[in-house]
Length: 193
Ligand SMILES: Nc1ncnc2c1ncn2[C@@H]1O[C@H](COP(=O)(O)OP(=O)(O)OP(=O)(O)O)[C@@H](O)[C@H]1O
Ligand SMILES: [Mg+2]
Image (cartoon, rainbow, N blue to C red; front, side, top):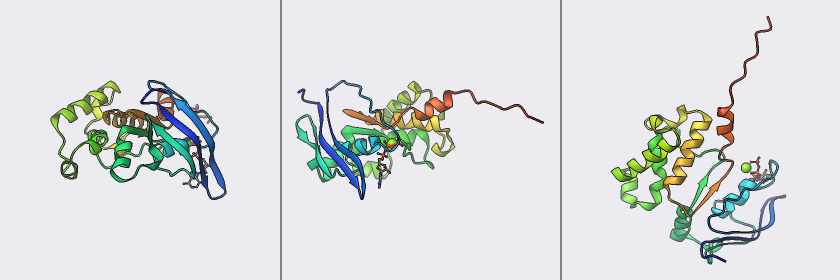
């Protein structure tokens, strides 16, 4: 197996009486693009959240490049979350902050704490964030508050934030659901009266 392969072994998660994930095993090679398909409530988000270590597995192991991810704590766990970006189903943007700042948040774990507390961003980081926003047609919204955006626009910002993080893995939880909605033409009913 390649050095940066992801291996999930017999991973389970129980919430009380609900067995959300039941002994999932999968090996994913570097450079792969893998989709998880399942009905609502099947455990897709929970599986991704366990890989990111936002949910603790009840049982099983996650290994990346030979390193046991399930055992990481403290600084090493933070480091893992930097290497493994998550695009959340609910976006998890900070609504009152502008688009550019939300995207730059993807850089938070790779800058010194004092700089993150003062939210001093390097010009190079800002330029890169703007470049990524431009690729997603969102550069014109850089100064706009995130809570003033449509669902699809927020989703694009969330994708940009993950890319700016320069991760080794991207866990995308239904990342284009809102994009599909906004790309549809709105339908109007004729006034029946
Ligand atoms: N924090 C939690 N506490 C209790 N139960 C939970 C929690 N998170 C998820 N569950 C339950 O675990 C199961 C799997 O949920 P999950 O969110 O992983 O499903 P999903 O496949 O992502 O669904 P969807 O397609 O609707 O997003 C569901 O039955 C859900 O109710
Ligand atoms: Mg889900």
